[in-house]
Image (cartoon, rainbow, N blue to C red; front, side, top):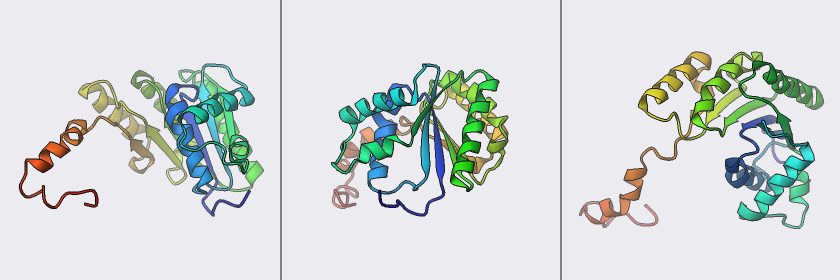
Length: 214
């Protein structure tokens, strides 16, 4: 296929790779980015989880998700075939620090194959109670000490209450540099968003100037 662009080669590790969030949202989003040529020419998406899959079984599972949840499927140019060749799966126990050596080995193998440095993204699409253990074990990897090329994304919910959110935030800040951390919580500000129409029409200043363009 046509070269995507000059973005640095990237590896995306998805904790919870066999789960519903990846099947419904993450892989379909990455697939659309691939079709639109927003991904690097050299990239890999690696699902991580306790469930045992071969690479081919994992690809087939995600293909079913694409058929159900993606706004675009295979457009006739073999997009899915080319994209699926970038998908891999590693069975591991996120609570076992030894398991993380598999991730470092995968990164080293791709560096050798691609003959270049790589960006590494860890996406934690897991239950909040699993995040602290995963973050702690990731922090022990040498590759996570490089704040230039390594990022960690925490998917919602960020903790399960205020206390746990503060504790998780402190753990992340003590393990990674701030520029490495991305926090996602879809429910922050949800009440405001739900009431934005009421706010518009109840306010004489906003009503005439807020519309579909502004």
